[in-house]
View (cartoon, rainbow, N blue to C red):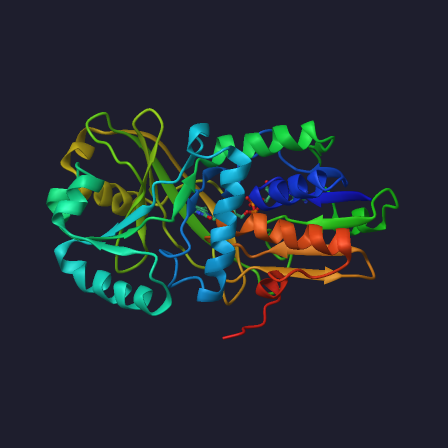
Length: 348
Ligand SMILES: Cc1cc2nc3c(=O)[nH]c(=O)nc-3n(C[C@H](O)[C@H](O)[C@H](O)COP(=O)(O)OP(=O)(O)OC[C@H]3O[C@@H](n4cnc5c(N)ncnc54)[C@H](O)[C@@H]3O)c2cc1C
C-alpha cells in the first residue's frame, strides 16, 4: 500500500518510520525546506509520563512508558547520545514547596514508581543543586530525547527503508483524491482553521551555554503558572522551557520579553552561575491541542483519510504510540489496545 503522510514533525516522521518498517511505501510531504522548524524541532524532548500527571490522565502513563521504550530501541539507548535515561527530578523553591507536596500526593495515588529524595540523595543525584534545594521528587523511569538529532535519525531511517520526503505544501483534499495513494495520514500539527476544536498553545524555550554547571538529568521547577524545566544537552548547553500561552496563532518563532525574563530567572534561581551563561537561542512554536488537551486519531474509512493531532506537550512521549495505532489499523484492519486512548472518549 502507498501512504502519503502530511507533515514532517515528530508525529508525521515517527508514523512514517513505523509504517515503512512494516513494509508500506511511504511519502512524507513537508511544506518547509529541510530541516523544518516546527513545534517538534524546538521542543524540550522530555519523556515524562509521571511529571506530566497533572496534564495527562493516568490512563496515558502506560502508553508513555511504551513511548520511552520506542525511543530506547530506535536510538539504541543512552549510547546514542540522543537519549538520556537518567530519570528526572522535581524541585521547588521554599515558597512553592506546598506545590511539591501536593504533587507527591497526586503521584502517590497513581504510581509507586517515584521516590522522595532527601538532602543526601539530592546531593548524590545532582551535586550542583542538591545542597540548595534539600528535597525533591525523583522519577527514575523518565527520560528525554534531543529533538533535532532524533528527527534527523527518523529521516535517515525512513529513507533507508525506501521512504521519501517531498518538500511541498500540499492540500489534504487534493491528496485524498490522488489515486496514487491508498491512504492519507494528516499530521500537520497546528494550522489555523484546519480542524474545529484544535487550538494553538504557544511554547517558548531558550538555549543557554553554562560551563560552570552540570546536570545529569532534566530538572523541573514547580511554578505557579507552568512547570519550568532545565534539560542538559551536549557541550554544556541547557534547554530552559517552556511557557504555555493559550489560544495563540502567532507562529512567528519569537519569544515575549515576559517569558524570557521568567525562564532566565528560573535558570538563575537554580544556580548563580547562570548569571554568566550565554544565551544561544530563544524560540517559540505553536503546539496543537484539542479542548481537553488530549490527542486524537480520527479515521475516515470512506475517504481513506486519518487525521492525527493534538499532541500538546506530549509529542515525543506519545507520537510512537499513535504511529503504532495507525500502522496496526492499516496493516491488520484492527484497532490495537491503545487505540481507545486517542478516541476522544474519556474512560475514567
Ligand atoms: C517549547 C516547546 C517545548 C516542548 N517540549 C516537549 C517535551 O519536552 N516533550 C514532549 O513530548 N513534547 C514537547 N513539546 C510538544 C511537542 O513538540 C508537540 O506535541 C509536537 O511537536 C507536535 O508534533 P506534530 O508533528 O503534531 O506537529 P509539528 O511539529 O508542528 O509538525 C507539523 C509539520 O507539518 C508541516 N505542515 C503543515 N501544513 C502542511 C502542509 N499543508 N503541507 C505540508 N506540510 C505541512 C509543518 O511545516 C510542520 O513541519 C514541546 C513543544 C514546544 C513548542
